[in-house]
Length: 498
Ligand code: IMP
View 1: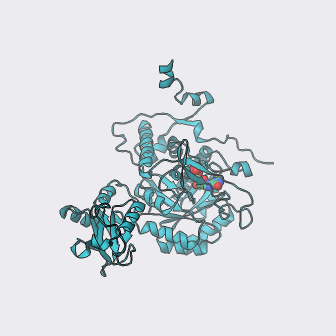
View 2: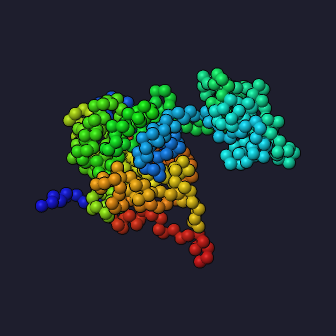
View 3: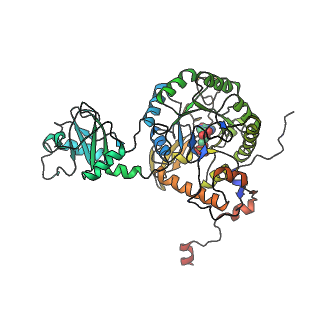
């Protein structure tokens, strides 16, 4: 006969945090959101820690190189999806690792004999007003000069004339060699009153452009998540089918952490794959999941997982519970797995962080997940809304939306994540839809971070370990849930009409 677990399966909406006493040294400015990403000895720092407890979902609609760069610049980590060829995924990892803040690969490029009319069209397409003139018109050709929108006027100059007639030739331009650092480049931008400094290799081929505005921009990101060589960190999803080939390629591309991506990670296949990675590539961090209970957590931790993801069926695009009847309310799952993590740490001396993955609908859900014991969270819908996510931005009558589709939808065709017994999906476990557009990731995430810090201050906690060890929570009734929302305010228009 089936065993019925005594506790009801509960979700984040059913809980609220009680405020704790706030000490005078506890303020939004002093709260630290740093958190371990991977397994470490209790009492020693982990080899990789996040600056903020956010990772982006291993999904086509979410973790592109652009989003990975934006999130790492804010202190979090993306896991580039694996539902693509090994070569394409490795190239995406390389793009993130090669990103050099402030060093821009020129996207507005022309040949010297292109016409000013053609230059105008290129500038219109990219929206940039500085163009590099290279011998072959490529971003890495030999630099012949620069031309900006200030160097010609569409009414005053013949648009059929060549770009070379209006450009500032390279001999008259300040340039820097490839060894230059961002601060050295910035010093020259100010000392020599420049707007742009081209960086050239020994043969005079263009490598990057450094703009004054980009240096300012760089100062906006004081919490970047970088490796020992100051390159942004990036993770990658892997599966239990082609890991023998995929893992070495991703390591060669410079990946910082891997994660087995499965809708149900409590399996011998995942344990075998974890064991293989740990045996053949002991230096790379690799996470496992997804699980919803302590037993499954311990199984993966013992198989070598460096962190474990929690969550089955709670994702915003997820229909796994409808289709297969498996899963667990995310709050119950996190509480159970967090207890198992602590028991594992007591027994072995090894702390294996856990990640609450999926179903975080409101910003305060993140705070609840962290208070319940998650070391960090993974989100799909949340990140899919931003400019940097790969989904198309679509206008509607109510405003812009962005495409967002589940990895278990027919659109994603991710048969590796959903082992249904064939090389294809027999039935869908995810939907294909839209999420409201939310602008720039840096600005959106700043609001979420501010809210979480503010919650922690109300709960008297200066860091995440303190937050989860001192948090007090209450279950909410249907009635008190109603009370949580603004419901007695008369709308201004209704009031004035009345
Ligand atoms: P969200 O943050 O609520 O949108 O959930 C994102 C998470 O849902 C991902 O990190 C995956 O764990 C999970 N997921 C992604 N695609 C699917 C799907 O098609 N069906 C079920 N779960 C999915």
